[in-house]
Image 1: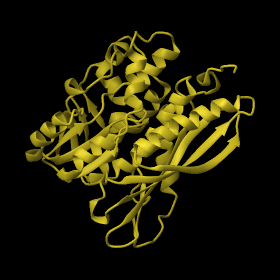
Image 2 (image 1 turned 30 degrees about the vertical axis):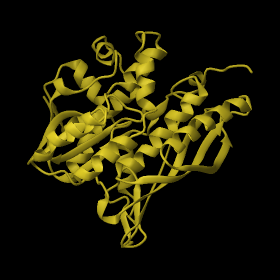
Image 3 (image 1 turned 120 degrees about the vertical axis):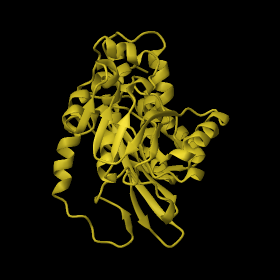
Image 4 (image 1 turned 60 degrees about the vertical axis):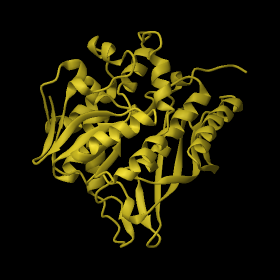
Length: 340
């Protein structure tokens, strides 16, 4: 089988290909939210997934997410794309149970390539406890893949972006830097091991982190993806009506990511994320850590706020389960985001 580097067919890969947040905000502002009592989460405000109440005990969580290749190996691409979509359900406090493929591929690509993409996705869907039950594929010059995912959550246990409260502490469950590392890989400048570290992070489901978090009843949760840590933190802060203060020195970085940022490696989405969130950010951080905070993430970790008195127990719980978590800041009265 002739091998074709998938990234050579994409203009931008992974969540770095997301539509600019500022433009999306403008587009969505013109849509009138559906007037439905049982639509618990929709466009007003938008969140990581839609949530629709079926009855007093059950609500559906529904999301769709897809993007162009960010790595050349088709099986790995499928696994990353699936993880990214499934994580939206975990970010709402839900558990996925059904997924459908959303695929676009050039006819010139060997069918084995699409088969490998689907195999990588299916493995991650199974690991999430769900079933890949079909999908839809069209012809396109630029490959794209992702999932539409349906999950379930109790109507009273939905994790919104809009629930952060003054006095909360802020946690992150994965290191940052996937965009920077992938850009360096495309430029031939990634240090040894950096890509492997980034891929390992991007195929890690947020299932275990969500399971460990659930007993703590967090006030606000979102996952960090294409708008970067600062973009998603700004969404959380503005929708919650609070001020979030982030300690730049505490930001966890993937292997090689901070050093690459210090050498000026940036993605195109870095600029778009700054245009969206920058006017609302007060930053006194050095340029490299600021770049890490604006960097678009693919299949990033959960960003969590919960009352400060539960913070130490959460850290101990994650540590005992062998799960990564970093305390990166706190929530105060006010507005905006501070990176200090």
